Length: 367
Ligand code: FAD
Ligand code: UDP
Image 1 (tube, protein in one colour):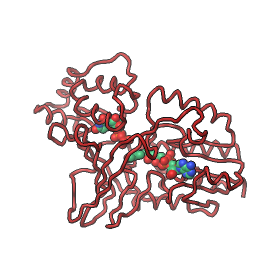
Image 2 (image 1 turned 180 degrees about the vertical axis):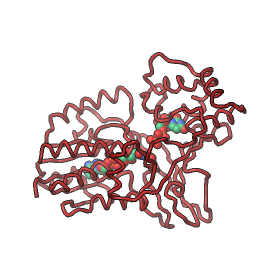
Image 3 (image 1 turned 90 degrees about the vertical axis):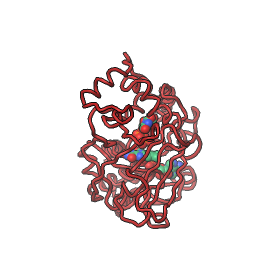
Image 4 (image 1 turned 135 degrees about the vertical axis):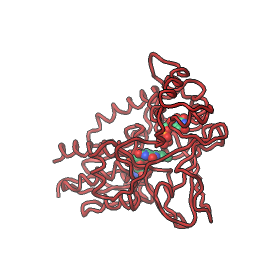
């Protein structure tokens, strides 16, 4: 055995670093304040036996073969391409906006070239694209912006499109063809036995000790800390909010088991940009492929208070994060990794990639 490490958080970031370090001969204690592993990607069976994602729908997609291969050591996959409809003007229309969306919304019959010309006619070209509003107006113009983006964004973030960095809305492309998949990545698949099972296998190593229900800030008052800590919780909390709290967006998940209904909706997720106070409804059986006589859904209600789920990408928050980053650079015995610790709107695959890199850097230092 080589050195020993404490890892805070048993989501993707913490679990991947734990595995890499254990395989290199380091002894790892990984703690999570929640009662389970997997972080926000945790899945479990509800009381009726339907596999659900308690922290909202998690769909795996990546263009990185390396990331896919890394996880493939710990899971088989079930191919799944996510499709989303948005309820707009009383219709259910594909989002990302594509040829079908435009034709059905405006009662047109355009071919691909026709859609491109249509968008050219309605878009408001911008010289510089800084905000999500710039990005959306530059791609699809004001009417589609109001119908699909402004209301959803206001609900999701409590902010106007103009107050968010361009990268937020840039997650949603605009298409002139009929492709109605939410993602176009090379690898799109769900862990065949679920995320939690995959995490169990990642953490199943003789040099990894898992402690759930343990908060780092309590743990460190009662235990001597090893020479190195890997922290994947919120960065501002680590430094006791020295420069003030970083804004994170939270959600309230309202789960419902729908008895005697095989299929609640025709696709995995339906977005409600302008109706209701929730943003979307997801039906898990589409994602997991589970066969069951009933079904389970979740509604997502955004809120300011509560568990931090999303960093809020806008320039003033990035400046505040950069102040914390300076402290990170002097904290040489701690590695900060993951969506909350790096304050980045990372997808799962991006967290896997950054965690593999962090572990490699750490191994160079610790041997
Ligand atoms: P987390 O999963 O948040 O793990 C951090 C862990 O640290 C948590 O378990 C937390 O309990 C623990 N922790 C924090 N503080 C402490 C402390 N003081 N002591 C002990 N433990 C602590 N990504 C996709 O690729 N596809 C999707 O479809 C997708 N959908 C999403 C939907 C929602 C609603 C949300 C919120 C996120 C979604 N994501 C999706 C993003 C995905 O959840 C993250 O990229 C990924 O889970 C981040 O992993 P992480 O390890 O950085 O953080
Ligand atoms: N968005 C929108 N309308 C939609 C879908 C997305 O305005 O129908 C915007 C909104 O600002 C949202 C962002 O695009 O927060 C990113 O959407 P995504 O589905 O990637 O969000 P996530 O799954 O991460 O919550």
